Length: 350
Image (cartoon, rainbow, N blue to C red; front, side, top):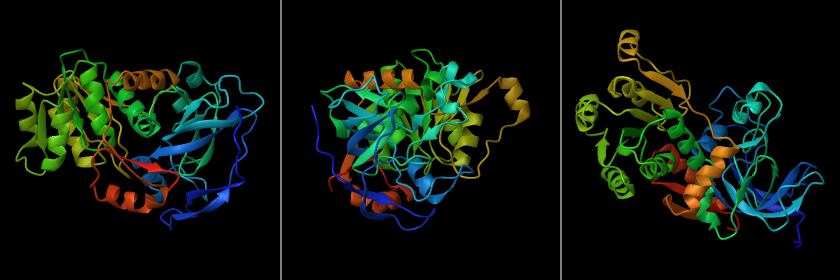
């Protein structure tokens, strides 16, 4: 099988953090010996992409930059060293584009924590373009009968919340609170949690998000915009507090509250990365309740395969809306205003 690869393509590019995002024609990249070239048909839009554009984090982005790290498409070319993909295979672009595979972290399956990690849409041009390169070792294998628009959000949002739930190490029947439950990560978090046998308390703002969370399987919805005492309300609803909390919101206040309402011996998992924020916990209560505060980064190759398996078996199906690649600035605007339900997916042909 062979494909005709054009010399140029459309992409969304910015030259400086916070600067204009320009939809323009750029060259199609050539894969290195260890890379595959993916014709990206769809790309999810993650809150991390917004952070990358704004320059919110202490890790610098490459500039100019093509963002995006939830790309799903078809392998149209591969480097001479690639053994695990064939032309015509479906493949996914993840946040982790590559790592050294030889350090102490890579050797124990913690490739995302590698000091030499290469990050799609951050230090490596990502999926907001029609053709993108990806390291063949880290690229995701996608089954041929998979709908590529629907699977795109799984490649970061799905893998990330699935890894967070594994980090919480909860048992079926226990309560998990998901803070920021109505967004892209949160909605998938609800579905993965339900599929894992957990009881879900969803936290977000607004009736529309509440209806969506309930539809996806949350037993309880707490609207932080209306709650008079959110800590008490959550503890009462779960008979003492959730056994675990997955913080996917980008609110420092919400994170601090989660340490208060979590159950004794509970686990608070930090996922969302609000700029310049800290988690605050009373040392006395931290010790007396023996609460664990854990950070969960993106998943490794095993986590990715497992998260995709849940999707391919029909156990998760994140709500999403497809718009054209050229509409990325409008999507970022809605995201910054907290007005997105589920996930936006970009069609690179538009």
